[in-house]
Length: 157
View 1 (tube, helix red, strand yellow):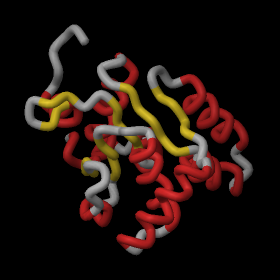
View 2 (view 1 turned 90 degrees about the vertical axis):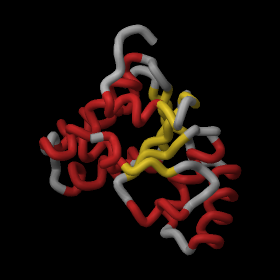
View 3 (view 1 turned 30 degrees about the vertical axis):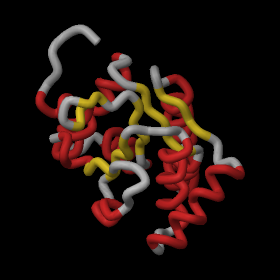
């Protein structure tokens, strides 16, 4: 990768000595980062820096676009909605994964097994189907899921 990693970046990028090559990101990673609240950007800045530099790749569900656009569109903030669209489409080393039949099937299994809400199950299923090494989320309720390692967003700070 080149360059030194910060402690926060190392926590995200490594599990012990094993590097995480692909991270799946929950919508809250984007919302917290875009909102720019200082307590959260200490957690999100290292995450997005790693992805932007190509130290790892990232995936997020197409559901992220739905969740990001809802408030701006409801409030008539087309410019903000356009900015969110642009960022998801052009952010380096980030892929938006469509919700296809395979993701839906895995989500149903996760939902049935853990009693998850459908959006959470879809995000986690995206991580599983994409073979992510970890799923970064601010939702501590997801830590009980074992199909993919859930990495608490706060852990990065």
